[in-house]
Image (cartoon, rainbow, N blue to C red; front, side, top):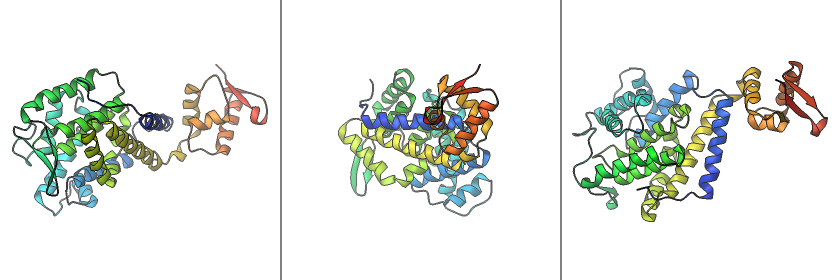
Length: 319
């Protein structure tokens, strides 16, 4: 069965914003950011996802552990970080559509932390908020069937991978298939699914944005539970993805991209006839003066020809 949700105007708007940002990533050749940004964002990802679950180590501790330095702290918290480092280092190796890989990822994240890492729970569980039960998960006897259905959905449904990643995240949290580690696993697997949309998502710290909006994250899960569908959670996560992607682009110093990269990409994407606004729309972040210099150089290089004056100026690709 397909999980219940609706495609709203907000979802369509945010999806368009993300698609535009991913187009900019291609323009900036950010499919794989520079090493400094990759490391920095991986640290943010691990620290944030575990902090949401109550891990007390700060970002300096996580940095030290990634650099194989010794730290002082609770053994459980240190082990959580060490496990997460191993899992995220192997993120690309997991098949996002295979339930066995899903279980292996949980085993890696939770090794030494629970008695049955990598195995679905064998008892009934509920999620507490203070002293009140916030969510009663489906019976443990249903978990395997529900998770198989969920993997069938992400494998065969025609909706976009972006939306399916959000639905998977919510439905997995609702099913609560593991004794522990469900939250970090939901975020981890959504990142892996998003990498099927664009490889840049391996280095986009979505978890940091969730941590910065942690109360709203839990509230949205609760609202989705009460409504019986994941629509509101899809809206929330698309907003999180859009914010996280925008921040990654900003931190990559897009102004440093050079003329050759800008123009090569523009000429491969723009229609045969285009104007300066089209060029700037594609190369977000550049000034009017930079766009004018680029276009003047393209004319000088014989790659485009010019027609008209002032606001009526148009450029035509040659060859």
